[in-house]
Image (cartoon, rainbow, N blue to C red; front, side):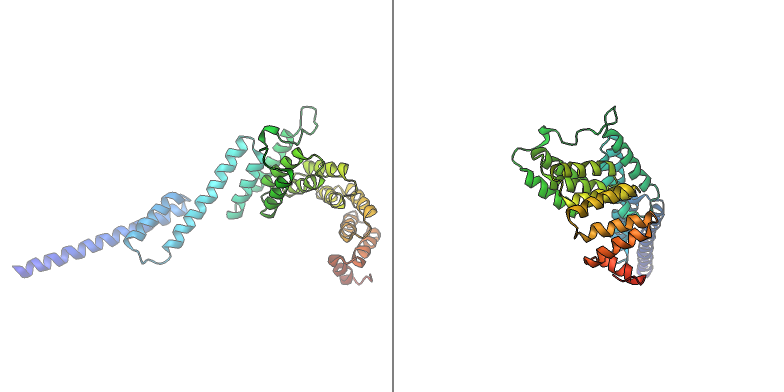
Length: 294
């Protein structure tokens, strides 16, 4: 009789173990199915449950981390869409860009970014089509922060490629110090990184109205025109830059690029030759490759 009880006990124990492992496998199957359906929050719960009953299972921590990564990615998109609906287009663009970084296969994000840029440009103009005041409201500026501190914060955000935040800092800087042409130039560059060439050119013009010899602003404005395929206007900017600094090899090189796009090979070679003589590595390499002495 005791032998029969022992056999029954072993049978029950084995049955319970089998049941536990069967439930574990059920967690894993559900997790994989939910993951394939892009239900990452639910998939994470199932992977976590599977890990509890099989702590030594390989690859589960990576699966949980992957779910968390996708959840963060979706969070970017949700926040971007909220910012877009609230007409906070700079914030929306930044969040869409963050979403694109973690989900490069998303096909509609470039269109979303372009649409935000378009809506931002429209909202940045008054009913007569003129650009609105680019300065922020004075109530938004803490009195304890100087223009130079805002400018340095802008540079910090630039280095992090957070151009929306950089622009806000430069706006605060020029509100406090209207003649800070360096901040206008940097603000223009930040707008240019966002693909907003209209506001970029306005900023470069503001910098040049303060300091007409600011060569960097001339070159940057030339690049903004070039990105819009306005090669004649871009060349004019580069000519003005070399009139101020004839030894600026970047201005000569960029001018050569514009002439190439205008199919003006002779003028392009003149510019590339001058740039190469002044030490521009790209021009030197280009001319060497085509066998042109410089």
